[in-house]
Image (tube, rainbow, N blue to C red; front, side, top):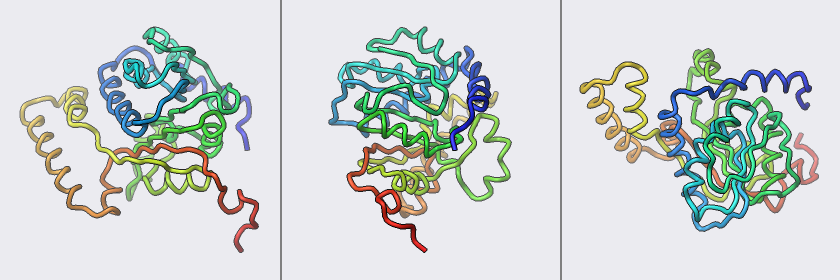
Length: 264
């Protein structure tokens, strides 16, 4: 069921002031890693028109726009008025359009883009399957990245996740299941950790930036890499901080979508 116009308006208002000035260094540093994942998974592909959905303040677009070989034309779709204004202030090269949308239906014709990007957005979305269908509709390729928020006991941290708008939690396996049941073909994927530089910056944001804490963080990052190298595939999925995929529409729909009766 689609959300009512009243529900969509409530959603827009909730995010309108989300990207007020401040914390720019934090956002840019986090966006740099997200942009690197996009460039890594799309390596060897050439795009004319690229759209980022839920582009926020344009931090990821800031890095993609600096790459002249990435695409000819960039577009942004954003629900937040403060985000739209922040993107426009950047005056990014090859930025062809900044579009406000209702958080549900993208205002573009079918297959308008070569690539659509949804980076750390799906966990904010009330109706993820509807959003995924829109991505398939508007673009040939899709890049999707989610934080790996799920772990045992996550229900005890509901207030924590709601404080920054996460209304769902994902693992790599859960995202893959969702994509495969929505007729996506997964071409490439990547599991990743938060970079050491971002962890060190976070110490300052928490008022904990001192020599001892910086040393502890650096040692923890090294130990994390060793644990990951020694772990098996199942364990690795529980250790990472984010999961990224490059997809396109599958040639053959699965199950009920292919017209077969549901299993009994």
